[in-house]
Image 1 (cartoon, rainbow, N blue to C red):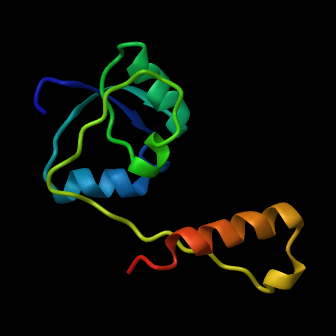
Image 2 (cartoon, rainbow, N blue to C red):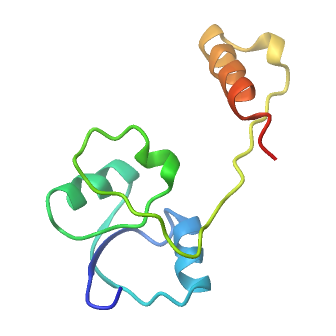
Length: 107
């Protein structure tokens, strides 16, 4: 990755990607720093450089960018918590049910 221009989020914004780069000794050149995922992808689509982004973010983006898997592969755990699922607003309950039905069998 030496010599490639990177668009990255500020260091305090995406700790998972920062940790991945540190653990894998990736010393990159950063030219542009942004605050959120979508701004990062927009800058990549406009030709400002490349980025490392979670697959979950890239699934539904409306921009024409190529995606490549990283080696070594990385993963993270995303938690879902509710004090009382019976008291959730209808939209929240729908999303909660969708997440449980789609991802509860992954271990």
